[in-house]
Amino acid sequence: MYILINAFYLIAGYKWGDWRNWKQYYPTILFFILGDFLYNFLLYEESLWLFHDLILPNHTTITILAMVVVYTATVLIYVGRFPNGWKKRLLWFLLWTGIYLSAEYFNYKLGFITYHNGWNIWWSVLFTGIIFFILPVHHKRPLLAWIFSIIIIVSLLSIFNVEISELK
Image (cartoon, rainbow, N blue to C red):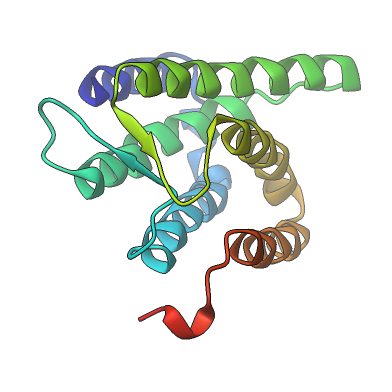
C-alpha cells in the first residue's frame, strides 16, 4: 500500500512540484522531515501511531520512505503552489488536509495504520490541520514556525503524558 502512495506522490511531485525553485523550499522540506523524525525518536517506546504494510518490513522503513518522497513532494506542490487570497488559501489548505486525512482513513480501515496510547483519527485531524497551517508559515517565517512547533510538541507531550525522564 505505502509503495503505491509513494509512487503517487513521486508522480505528482514530478508533475506539479516547483522543482525549478527547489532550493527555496529545501529548509521547509527539512523542517517537515525533522518533525516526523522527532516524533519517531521521542516516542520510540510509546508510539501514538504505527504504520504496517504487506511489502515494506516495518514502521521505520515506511516512515523514512515517506520523509524522502511524500514530504518532499508535498512541500514542492503545497507550498510551491500556495495561492494568493484567503479564500483560495483556505480551499488549498482544505484540499491538502483532505488528501492526507483520506489516505490515513483508508489506511486505518485497511489495517495499515494503528493508533496507540490515546491517539485516534480526531487527533490526526487536528494534527494534519496544524501541519498544513505551519508549512507555509515556515516557508515565510521559519522562526515563528519553530516557536509554534515547540509549543505544539510540549503540549502534545503533556496531553499524552510523555515524561521527559522516561525518554532514552
